[in-house]
Amino acid sequence: MYDNYQIHLQKQLTEIESAGLYKQERILVSPQGPQIRTNTGQEVLNFCANNYLGFSNDPRLIIAATQAMKTHGYGMSSVRFICGTTDLHKELETSISNFFGTEDTILYAAAFDANGGVFEPLLTDEDAIISDTLNHASIIDGVRLCKAQRFRYANADMNDLEEQLRQAQSCRFRLIVTDGVFSMDGNIAPLDKIKKLAEQYNAMIMVDESHSAGVIGKTGRGTTEHFNLIGQAEIITGTLGKAFGGAIGGFTTGKKEIIAMLRQRSRPYLFSNSIPPTVAAAGIEAFRIMNESTELLDKLHENRQYFVEQMTRIGYSIKPTQSGICAVMLGDAKLSQEVASRLLTEGIYVIGFYFPVVPQGQARIRVQLSAAHTHDQLVKAVDAFEKVGRDLKILP
Ligand SMILES: *Cc1c(COP(=O)(O)O)cnc(C)c1O
Picture 1 (tube, rainbow, N blue to C red):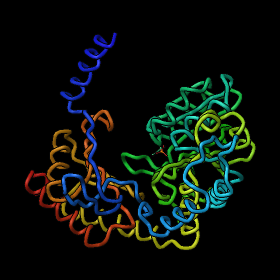
Picture 2 (cartoon, rainbow, N blue to C red):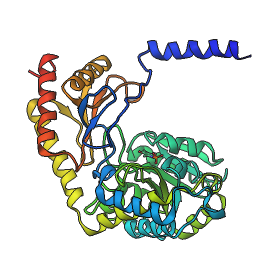
Picture 3 (cartoon, protein in one colour):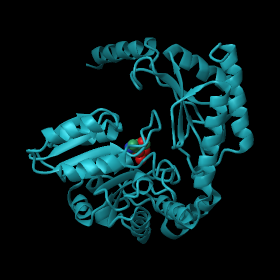
């Protein structure tokens, strides 16, 4: 039986490879951080991690995790509702609710699970989900698992959202779903306008703050803070795998009845293991640090601002951004791969994205800034971009 299937897979894999879409893994032998070492011995400056606040290797989080390992052990060997809940899990849920100004929080093994498990228990075929077309894959999959009627609006297009809301008026409940910051352009969802439309057309709001929490808003509380709408989205999902330590874990936070229902019915919560106590303890520490000071957040924005200014000065076309994501627009797919590969030779690790991940003709390098980048590292990155840009005649 496997013989035929093996040939079938080999053929598909070859197709993926010849289309230039085969994903390789780069093997790190150092901790995650602004400077990393790979198994080939190469040391590079890293501009493609979601390590926005530098928490991935922050000594304070490491101490918190180590401490928890001593007091609470290694693994939970259980889902939350059987014997997978410790005081640390409850404390982290409270920390998250306090941080976002929400009523209650439920933890998941990942934001992918939070999104995968949020729709199906809450909505039925009588209801409508109105989703931004550029929402994360986990939202798309979560929506697929739910029987609610599906409506899609063009990215951040409020005319289209209004049209979809009109079409969904006969449904019982309506839920508008958006990423807080979109991962390819780094643009912020227009939550203020979404809120107005939600009021006008009687809809609820869900925001996935995975790329925006810890990054957007005066104190890093995400898009609801940015637009002065703390506590006004019914549902927020987010990850511990990006700004807040980068280990693993996700959450849904929001109205208490919603969270209560998820604890009863959300399948990734009921049928998947609890996050380890180390991760919960480090998460608590990350939110504590964020509550105490905006130092890291300010540093991230200072770094992003400097990088954007310098890249614009030397002549690159940059998508407007207020997030940790900076899209350096190149247009041509091949060119984006060539630039990324030459930058790597210069010791700068970035990824080039092209169709179908981004629209045709809008290939780009996505640069992700971090509070952990030093000024010197940013200067090196800009210099490398300048050299490669000149060599490839992208820049004058
Ligand atoms: C990264 C990301 C996720 C998935 O987060 P994990 O915790 O790694 O599963 C979900 N939604 C958005 C918008 C993301 O950017």
